[in-house]
Image (cartoon, rainbow, N blue to C red; front, side, top):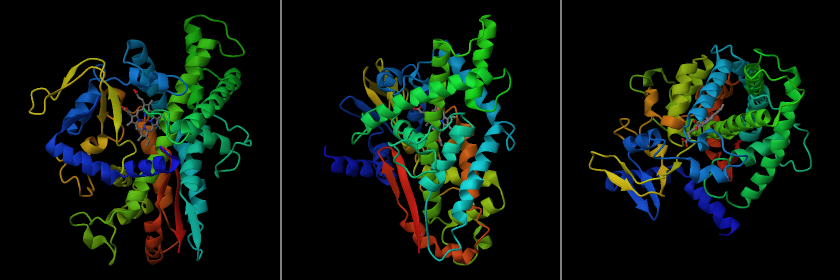
Length: 460
Ligand code: HEM
């Protein structure tokens, strides 16, 4: 396929409306269907079932060899050793995210959001302005998170830099975008991205090893505020258990443990955060839905976008929970991961004891679309309507079952803070804000392969 038609095909396939429509039709006519050796599930119950049966619906053999930088949790079977490591990583992430509002994570995220939002909000009083919410906001915030929360320092930019992000972080941004966006793609990435990703993965690996070895001598047992610090703390306790003497640099196994988990967490977290933020904010900006029942009276005359207005009011009042509910409902209309994939190592029956019961032959690839589950009316009522107070279990943004996202609480904190700082517009009045709507409507998400390249709002 030529570069142009690959890009057009990608653009078409990335349309959530197209995917929703197609899967919705299948849900009614043929909820479990196969095309060649690929089976597609469309019913919420079957999607949950396949994600819970991790041994029958595996990630591993399908992706292991293609996983850039080696297999990480998602690509590993639930053997006891992997379960142990997962438990440890989950504990590490929650230690760094607690207590809510005053954790090491909150400190980094709030500082980053405040700094980058102020540059954007400062422009709004000008007669003309232009902001790119990817390169001027989401990407720099996530880069700050990679440095301050994950503990990876930024290498000096070199000639290969290609992005306009906070100065000094171009190379890190490039690595994350190029490697992070294809890390879990199951087909070779389009338009030459695979080669760029492989080259970036090599550079990133060397950089991570250098970061880990540089941080090791000063790592104090029991005292850490970053993911890298937590991994080095674990190395300390393993050495203590094995009564090993300490060395100035990490040994091969230790370095492998630190690198594998550090990169797994960083890549699983950084690109999806940028994507989730832009998808969610784009939907919040543009959805024309009605106010919630009984809420209309509180709206000023002429407000046509109840979700955006509700989010703006919640942000100005600092009501995080309300903003979170609105954000994840908006994201439902264009989820970060509309489709997950699995592999069947043996013949399995799905939806047994229902009229949908189907056998999936060994060796089949199974497409598991959270987007279909989140628009299935057996899972949530009135799926086409914007819901202002849906329960959390109606959503599948962070997957389901055995491979449920390990960074969910990190992502929630980061996304809500990003939305809160951006929508907390105190500097201009509501009428001026309303005048920005046509500019917001023209904003378009531009993709760079699976990652997002830009989302520009140009006023007037
Ligand atoms: C908005 C941002 C994020 C979204 C939408 C997201 C979504 C997901 C989804 C859907 C899965 C399951 C994939 C599957 O079953 O095939 C997953 C797995 C995972 N996520 Fe996230 N994620 C986000 C952020 C993060 C962050 C910030 C971290 C780390 C700090 C993280 C760490 C992981 C890990 C380690 C796994 C694999 C878990 C396993 O295999 O057991 N994610 N994520």
